[in-house]
Length: 167
Image (cartoon, rainbow, N blue to C red):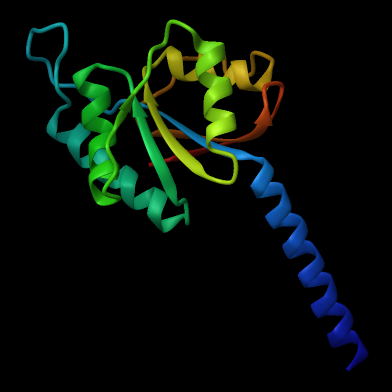
């Protein structure tokens, strides 16, 4: 009986430690836009494969327990279309961000989403740039591929954990 009590107390202690940590950290989920269609324009939509992958993105996030509180996108059709299924499913409006001041953007995301998760849709080169900025070092050296999801848990620039998943 005493082992059971010790186990329960340890479980509760680690549960509270985990909750405290998540209250201090933002979970920023970065993804490159999905496959784009070739329509000959400078701002093409995503292809049917990209649409299917964008819908799957929402399901992967939901099935892994991420409660997305905001969806961010650059002002390109392909990034907005990638985030739209997640935003629609959660009754959210996509918020546009500007890549011109990356440090301000990253700091605002960390502060704004402490204790929350946010989806940030970007591009093959901006996605690793933002992640490396948060890490405070260049760990991701290759441009991202379609279907890579970068889950970044952080409380400040220079202190982060990154997990990569496929969707």
